Image (cartoon, rainbow, N blue to C red; front, side, top):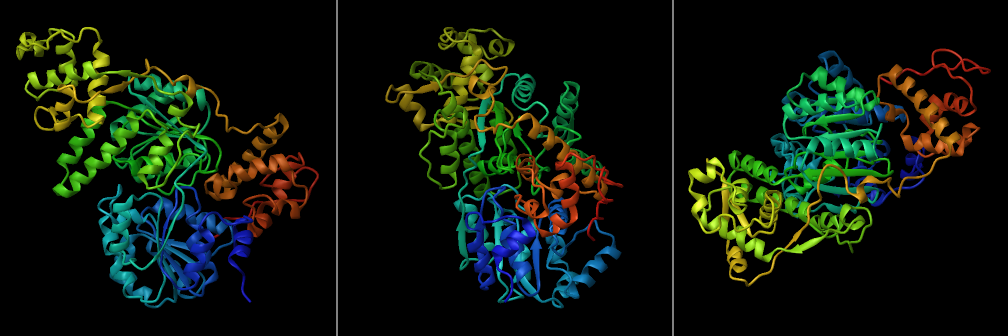
Length: 622
């Protein structure tokens, strides 16, 4: 009788029990049925197709959209003693042929391929020579034009899978609303698939949102007050901003590197390697960075520009705290961010239906930013998951937002929009309301209209906040063109006629995190000094081994495993196997080295550990 899924989980991956839905998905595939898997980032989706491929006869074919994603997973599988390989455009032809020979000979259990490779005529001919165990389509939201990372090649995947009837198919993603889910099932021919929807809640992540005032000082204060020396990702909209902020952070004592699609591949790889090995603290990136990067110890994800949707926001923030330890998702936003994103949508080549959906997605994200209630409840609600609120781990729960009755202010603001011709933005309207005679105000003779100066009781910054919140509440719309400006909507007239009250949130003064955001996380676990010192020694040993094998450190062991070693201090090979994340393969490869380090011996990975036999680091698998 063969091994069971639970035995493979322990022997190969070092875990004693499955997470939510994993065992059910695995059994569904082993029974020959299709499955759709929606689980949050870091919840163990890969296990759902890796274990069936290990157990079933034949090779499991995994479609992955990024080279970095597939290479990281293959390296990790090698370390766990699993026979895995990948094929993508960056491999030399000789290596491609070698991988295909080994796969055809039955020496590969998991073969990762890019969608472009899968669709090629030569590879499709090669597939006919294989005994396939399953098709796994990772990052399946890429198939949907409503998703946040649409890839046209994904639309053709069904052409290939349809030629292998009876082979079970899995589609896996971390982010998909109801519309995107429906699209995935239709485009991949999975309408009869069993669906597994995991909880989207990441209780270890604290969600913090601020109005953008002075983004540089806000970012630096956030990092220095909460994450000094800890790894993080900073997302920006443009390549130029990525370069500029990486340089600036480095100058401020936060070692950072840029990452964007405009860089040479070698430079991107080098910056990614430095981040994975903690040579730099932060990566400042466009959305080109992050999908499938399994760095577990990212303690913060910061957004200096709004993402395009709640899906994109959720996926990007999900790259923090994959090890289950406390992490922050921090974002600053402004009215100009919303207008800039809407302008991008309007200039896109998509049809009107596509633009309408994207506007709604952006509006949902904007509403999330402006919310005064529990952010976790809103975030989970967007994906159809109920939450009672009061999570205790978002900015609004930790420090309730002050509000004020802004009905009269709203009437003045809306009246000013109407009397200036519904063609101007917040900055000009704020000048009119505060009675500021700028060149533009004088040019348009807006110093002569009835609303000029009627809002002197509030400063310009507050009026800008009023317009931002009116837009978020659906009491204004934005017309984009050569001269972008606000437009009244039906609901605007309800306010102007006194039929509807309006309350606004009080924006913080800016310049740094609020009281709720500045302190240490209550979820942070205490570590005694001796354990902390041993943890650092184990990290240094791990880094030395990783550099020797040219793999990311977390491929050797995650921080969670090292922390457990530092606290439990196993002294025998049997006890070492009980550490979370230590399977048979890793115990054989690294057990003596790490046990020696735990005993306090000086470990030389090139030679000997003091008072012990020679210990050498095994070569990377090939």
